[in-house]
Length: 128
Image 1: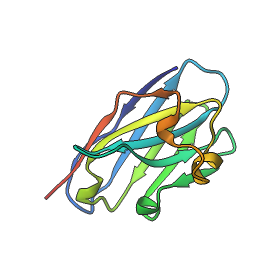
Image 2: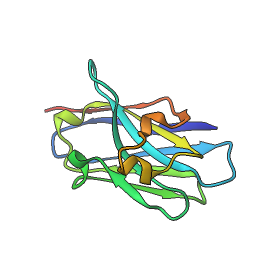
Image 3: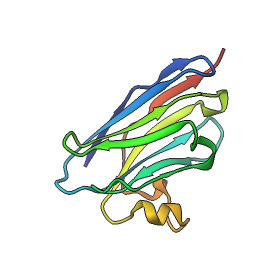
Image 4: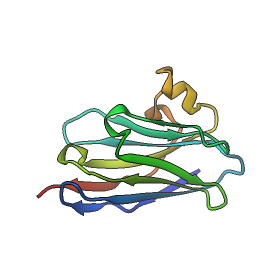
């Protein structure tokens, strides 16, 4: 599985960005998600979307501002980010897994960072 993330950039507080991640190398519909890592901090799950049915989970701190979605025809997962804050500054990674799912992530039994395949990351910087 290969993942190619894009869409990061620098924005002012309150701004918006849309991250995209194209996945290749699989024929089914695995769980897809995003996590992030800020300088000097632990990796942090952001959002997850399950297989073709699209069940979703978002971390509480972003739940009202970010939205994950997927286009199965394009094998692409998106993260629409609005109301960006300086604390959202991080490298954002997409991840894919065939065995884990977002119900497990929502229940705290798995993490997006446990997913088997990761992309290369895209930098998001929020500052005035």
